[in-house]
Length: 439
Image 1 (tube, rainbow, N blue to C red):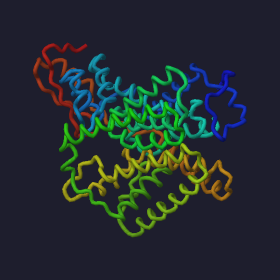
Image 2: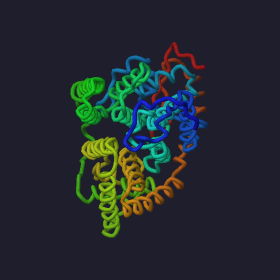
Image 3: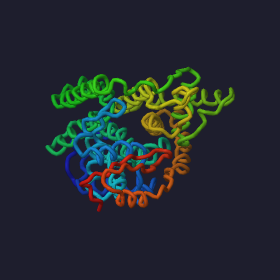
Image 4: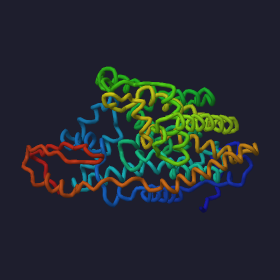
């Protein structure tokens, strides 16, 4: 990639004195980088573009609410207790397109959000993570992450990636341009009003502010604090019963070992798997070894990792603890929530913990401790194997969405239609209004 000869705005310890500090990535190069990252995400799930369909809350909540209630009223509605601004806005934008293209619009926006961290990692203000070659490896591993296929090309779960973008902004150097400041504030506010992530980003922003004590660093602290208040109001006042009746949590040490060993550490290596759900002592022993080994390797690598990596470890740990303390899953009778999520190797909860572990492996392999370099390098080879077998994300079942669109178009005003969407047996409920003219 060609770089323009301009002084860098931020220098990390690993870049000090390096030739690359004499260059900055131009805007057009960032655009090319975004397009390249976007294309890679599409290559992992091409049906999101070439055979777009609604998925779960994408249809049943965000689009259905926008279609039935209009673009504004849903913005003040909560979902599982939290305001969800990003998918609500995306659904409003999808109303501008014909009904047939609405899922495609949502997926296009979702993939754009998913590709954005690559630009943030490459940005000069992220130089404290390491040199550009190292950051290129970090970005590549983010795009190729073998775990958590649930977070790919659907607007519902891209809120996790949006919050990760804000984290990268928080630990990076302060923006120096008006456009950079506007983007920083916009993303922070949008993420803060989308789900509970502001609650966990707030302590990170405070730690960064206390370390640098720069006036600008106080602004994201204030924004996230205000968003926390709004989300708490939504959880306790607007929807006080939204997170009740979800089943027994069923926390147990054995399940914790299975979750950490199978879904986090083995999930980092081979992607989504069902190892945590395999019964028996032998399976538990293997998962215990995986959990202990992973924690040891991660701890050793973390000692030599740069400060942003240490912040990421804290942030990922907070999210994982919250996911285990208050999992968003309805456990069927006779099954606890922990039992249910232990067997769910593909879900969003493992996204950041697995990414954090893989990035720690990269720092371990690029460090100075020979034994850690060898071990981390060997484990990264397993990660590459996992990437190869998990590159393509699962294709959604073809539910003949165009035929459902024709059924909506032919329905008289006032009719209520139930449209099957993925995953089965989810359904989207649309009410044909009198003034709705399908295009």
